[in-house]
Structure formats: C-alpha cells, structure tokens
Length: 122
Image: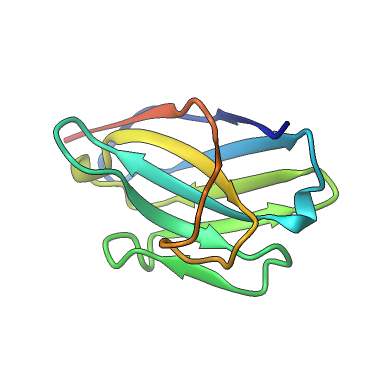
C-alpha cells in the first residue's frame, strides 16, 4: 500500500521561500507520476505541479509558473516542491499524490498524503 508523508510546511512572509518534501513508500516509486495539490479554505483543490516518473515532463498551474519548481529523487523515493516568491494567496494545505497514469491534473490519483499547512503572511 502506497504511503505518502509530506513535510516542510510552515509560516513564511510574503516573498519568502519554502521547500516541501513528500516521502513515498509501499510500492515502486518510478511507476508513478507525482503531483502537488493545494486546498485553501472555501476553495476547490487544485493541482499546482505534477512530474512524470522520470522527471522529464512537468505540469504547472498558471498561478505558480515561474515561482514553483517540482522535482523528484528516484533514489530517495522523494518528490519536492520548491516554492519561491510566495504570496498570501498561496496559503493552503499542500498534499502530494501519486498516479499510475500520465502526469496530468485529470489523471486518476488514488494515493494521497495527509497534507502540510503553508501559511504566507502579508
């Protein structure tokens, strides 16, 4: 059974940076595309970044392009989200998710982490 554990969230001032990590276990990491999604209070969940199993293909939501970078280390079974130039509107619970499908926000993601809170103060 796939397990995903996020870390690295916290409180940061606007303009600052955070790096989220998601540790994967329970299956073969390289079979999965990995995504980071977020959900703010009262808003729908949205995928902000997705990466293919090899790291060769990525997707970014328009709202984070140029500020966020997704990467993965297949030797460590870990996916990362580097978040720079953070804005108050980036405040949300960030969760990682795994998909056996393509690296696309409409793929099926059956496995999810518990999430980590990111709060950006103005």
